[in-house]
Length: 508
Image (tube, rainbow, N blue to C red):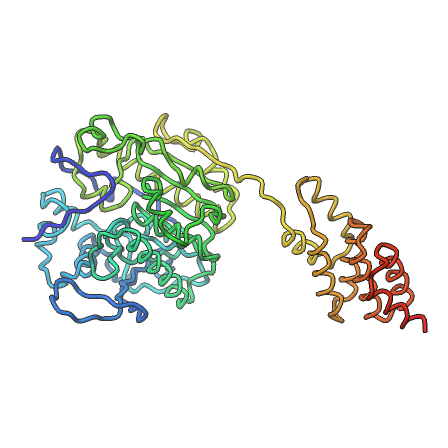
């Protein structure tokens, strides 16, 4: 009989007790939509893969099991919702043990075969297979699971978000070559990032999926999501459920795609409580994990929300962890406290996504309130908010704004920018190149002249800018203005052969 240990950041000792929880007691406050559910396997033909327990040398296109939760308005007449066992049958498939008898699930995989866990298998959820799509388009959340975990590990949270008007899609966390990770976690991090990007394309095939995308990850999934955000402009927000990017920043920096400066969308990190001293000592964990967060310190271009949940340890940020994971008597809180905190994780996830993907101002106020003002008990949650640093203003920033104004009133625009960004400087060369690009296009010649006029205002001793301004006037057929500008250029640089030649031609 095989027993697979669920690898998370914090390892548990043998000092465990059984959990006594239920979906009913967690009592997530679902929204107005019914929850539809789809699960199937797609294939990424750009990568190969081996089913490890088939014991063959056969390579196949990389299978991508896809779980989708989507809003539905359909009345669920004569339909039964999924049970927890139905979800764990998906786990069987993703673990490549499709034919394992259901009665063996608790013996075979991650959780103890106790009466309480057997009871969990019979619990009903709020998701219905094959329900019709609701009308319209909905923002998309792509969920990246923890280390080698199933797409359904956080099914209750996925259902909850869907019921409030989001499409949620997930695939399992699996290795590059096989179901299992190799010893090269940097490679596996990149593989999971590519799987998330595959889902971005896959979910786009559905008419219910909108263009706005957020990514959410638990534990190891948090690492891959940072890479995804860094290289995909479609990602508008990042949710981290005690993501490993907090604990293994060094692993993140091994990726050539990582750049903290590219973290330019809202980011929320919900973290476990401080690890007790006894656990640090007995499990040989570096105490710096309680305080250090290098990614948080490195982000300068986006607003960052940092929440600490003082009644949660790492595994309790997933549905399966809350329901099935055995408790560590050295550090875990009571089951009612864990369920209540998980409920707050769901609430903050929802409000953050409502604020960032739907522009809900009340949701924004919620996540920026003191948690106690939102109804959280004292000392249950602590919140830090880090504002983005004031960015340097660049010439492309200036040009984008100027183009929206059709390059009118450029002197006033330049002066207004300097008030907010006193270090902003425009180079003579940039103005000259932009002006020439515009002036030689008959549709934008007037705009090019305006750029040159700004240039000669800022650089009154530039013979080159006056020469270019003259060329612009000449191109537009304004010989009088061309002569005036060529003469000014020649005054500033008597050796300007272009101005000498042009003036000879113009004065004939």
